[in-house]
Length: 297
Image 1 (cartoon, rainbow, N blue to C red):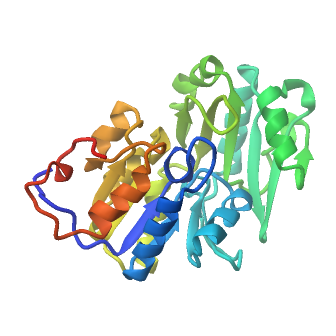
Image 2: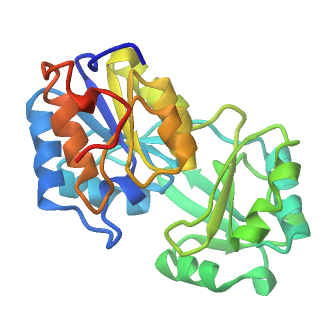
């Protein structure tokens, strides 16, 4: 916190939902322009998201990105637009089955994400534990959905990328104590894209932070020259790991505390403001309040 201005930024990692996109899931003109200006300034721009490639690639296309994308909260890095796998951090199948069993005890339908070649698959159980949020999720991604008996969902199967749950906040957070005892990494958010709480169970130490670290190493960029922008619990480690972490104005308090700076919300072009003020204006006055941990617009 003693540093008065950010370092020269060489790599920029941006979360998508709640950060890059407005609540209406749109990219604003100013955000597009800021990302383009960063690229023109020689800054490598990537996306670091909980999303899979199938619903991340189109956004990368809109922004003109040709770069490895950090997906599934760091469990997968895929080269865009070639769709080739750069790096994976799979969850051991035995631990994934433990996560499946835990979710079933809480009455939650587990969803297991796999990558087979360049094909993203979703494996889940019989429809008995489906809910309205999962119905929307499965409708949005009807391809490569496989239903198996719960006892065969992970046991004896290839290691998956992660196991995820979509349910009410009460049910999702009821698993915190038990999932904390598993040999895994996990994160939970109170409200995701489908209007419910979500939990993701991944390989131990896997996070957006490890994904960003891996990509920075691949590009020979020190973490001190990486800037990341995010808004939710699954962004926290990433904001702590990089040289200049920026939290969105509507982020919860722990996420803001993990960041070096706080920008405006996603209804106020917070990403564009952060890029303009930190990545593109390194020489700004150190006396400006914008270089302190205050929300600015």
